[in-house]
Image (tube, rainbow, N blue to C red):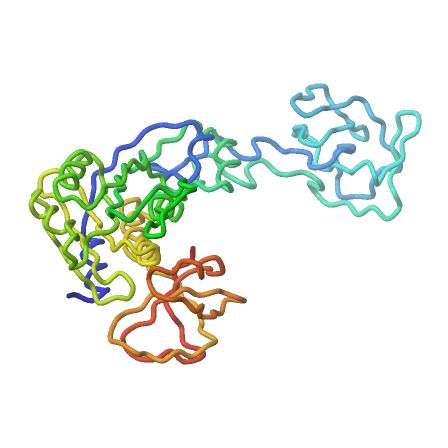
Length: 391
């Protein structure tokens, strides 16, 4: 049995080849960019009026008492006629300010009569008042979103504005998801026997990993060694295979033996953690497929996904960073020699430990904001900083 740190190191040493594709920007959300996103123009691409008002040239002297208006400029148009001082134009928000004008006075600071504009007495002028200057947000040729960035909703406006549509992204990772156990029935079943358990793992795992570009296919298998072997063979073309259940030491825990019989190399089986101790991890030496075989109890699955599977996916997609930290405002004794991953509720960047009844209990997750790691080194004291895995 190895430590959590040793196990995670082995996980992060593995690699899977990635493919790429060009997708419309509207389909790129949460996918990972392959190249730097470079602006094809200045942004704004011209001196842009930020207010409806009146544009003219100001020579930094006393503003004219009145301004003759010789035309109107709307967004989406240009104005090419000469605009001699002291005349100006009526201008709308978003319109390109003619190059020889340097002030836009918003209409609320003016009075208009007989096509002449006068200004409020308390008006303070300054060069380029109410004008967004060309390139003040983004310069042509600059990197706006670096490569290997997860495309977030906040990236979409600027990527569309600078012409990054379509955009090259990494294609979704193909994930095989198998659940095992004679006691398991589909979560949609309404009439259920006392000895049966609804399958939460098959819907929990995609939910926990929803913000990554992944494509899941899967099925449930009863506790039958031959059927398990045949099913795993059908999923050999998936980049990652996740199996829940059947990895401990019971008579019907066939998963480790079946994987070895099929030629997979075991990199570790059993880790000094709680929950999730029986976890099996390995690779197929020919196909390169990576396998996580997890204990089937629902909280063990949640914990294993957060502390092993998600870091591996982040690593593949160039997104991995060590977990953030959080401050404990409660103490907790250490009663074993295992790394424990505990459900907590985060309030004002401090945590409260949530009571739970072992690895089969997921009811406490309703109030959980994440997990913390209670290391083997001893009890937790108020004010201790702990690794934090937010949901």
